[in-house]
Image (cartoon, rainbow, N blue to C red; front, side, top):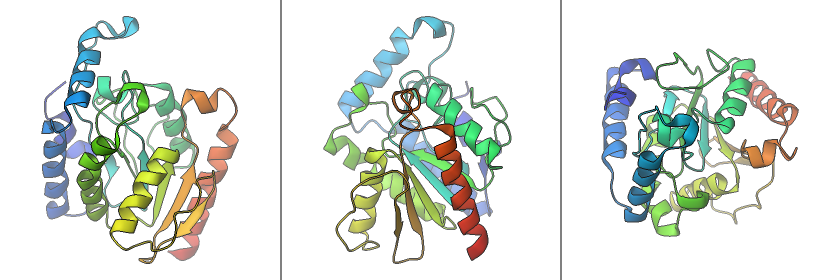
Length: 247
């Protein structure tokens, strides 16, 4: 994998040269970040040890930037890269079961060019969707500390600014939801008490955007039926219908 694989123009759908340059610069900043010693140590140790089925793979082992269409109407945020998903492949929601579930649903809803997200060279394109994570490095046990989360906040804020046409922010899981709502509250875009997380929750922001919450498409949720394909597909259909009505 090229060190700047995530920076090339084929992987970001830009609305202008300026926006394109902003996301390229941001992605470089993300990839070079070493602000959290515990996360640096963990992501690199996972990349060295590898998983048995991926022994022949060259792990990315660095922070993982966002991916997709920066002119998107839908901004998707998850928790963090998976140890042998994004941390291996170098692309968010790529190469693991959560990615399989999410990208298949996006494909069926017309937002992805193909139903699988396998690696950075698989040809996947997103149309109308940009996806990222609240924390850019894989954390041990999927539990970043509050300081580690805070260290990534400026990246997330920059992504939201670059994706200025987003009208729906789809938060996958409680952690992503709380991270996003905390950021929006600090920016005075949400002034009330943060509502309790639940699947299908909708919150209208002062700037006209809308937060939509969903259970995370992790195997823990999808294999137990906490989140089914029908549930998630129904949520995407509602988002699409609402966007069509207000366009």
